[in-house]
Length: 84
Image: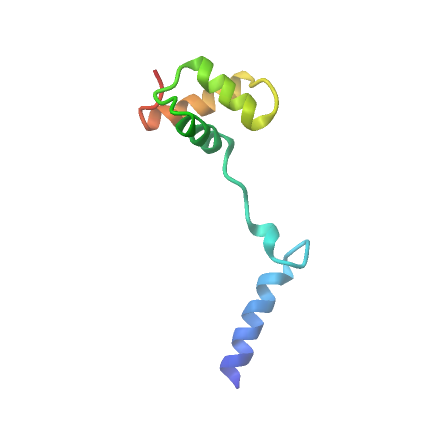
């Protein structure tokens, strides 16, 4: 009986801090730079040019990328040798 109570308490604790009461708010979305890399890979644009990165960033975020977003995405792509 104690094992069952411990299990149920553990499950209840997982939902206590949840703002929605579902526990799903702890799931986070992928970083923008990873979504950009995925977009470029799907479009077979690796290694990518700066223009390709800017277009992918705009497609992912819905706005023209700023300097910080470009730098972040380009540094991420450099880790994989996916930037020309």
